[in-house]
Amino acid sequence: MLNDQLKYSKEVRWALEAGTPIIALESTIISHGMPYPDNLATARECERVARECGAVPATCAILRGKAHIGLDEEQLDFLARERGNVVKASRRDIPVLIARGMNGATTVAATMILASLAGIRVFATGGVGGVHRGAERTMDISADLEELANTPVAVVCAGPKSILDLPLTLEYLETRGVPVIGYGTDEVPAFYTRNSGLKVDYRMDTPGEIAAVIRTQKLIGYNGGMLVVNPIPEEFSMDPAAIDSAIARACAEAEEKGVRGKELTPYLLTRVTELTGGQSLGANIALVLNNVKLAAAIAARI
Ligand code: PSU
Ligand code: MN
Image (cartoon, rainbow, N blue to C red; front, side, top):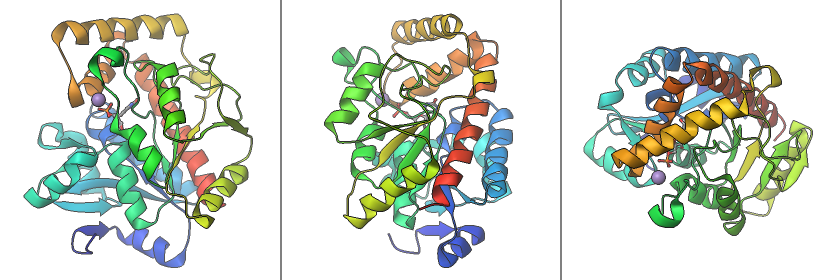
């Protein structure tokens, strides 16, 4: 991408020049994943924790048609408040938003694209998109999964949320050649809870082991990414029955209302937060920060 379209924050530019650790962060989680003002507080806290752990945060977004890698306070604030003026931007949206000079909050897929253009190999978030429940009828499969197959960025998440069909999501990742690496776990965590009954492809107990795989991908010119699943800290994990019933209800409501396409994931996230009386939001914030710490530790060892 031309430098004219790609804007780095000062901090990110220096880190790229100095070769010091950087982690990418997404912005759809700010604009469409959490309510205001918790979204802003979380975005700021993620950046603070990244720095505390020795990594420069590169929160990505498209602002007035420029792809930004690293945002300032004002830009974070804008994304957190102006949900209505910000497009949820995945792979397909990037060229249109740039051509039209629009604002877009980047999903996991779009953040991976910007991170990879900047040469950033590690990215922390909460949840990734996946194969939705009922996908055999709706074909609703997130573009995040294709990006993981094609773009060399390691995404640290807390496992697929059970608004998705977890077994189908893992099958899809297997087909597309994306390794699922469990950090300190043999089981794929299910975002709000630490267990899903499903096995990871590989368990790794140190950030260094994960960094070694990233270095190897680089060495052999491998184009795909990887999914690192990091269980929610025990003290924040939720009661499976409570979260399952909120998710089941949110999914049923979405179906009834005919919510589909890019609207579905934000709708489900909002309803689950409402139905759990905000309890799921606290868990979500805790796990994102936990993922930032792991991503920073991996980035330091690449
Ligand atoms: N899952 C979450 N929180 C989020 C998202 C997913 O728990 O904020 C966001 C991410 O930006 C992810 C996107 O990339 O939703 C996936 O949307 P879709 O399913 O429409 O591809
Ligand atoms: Mn979808």
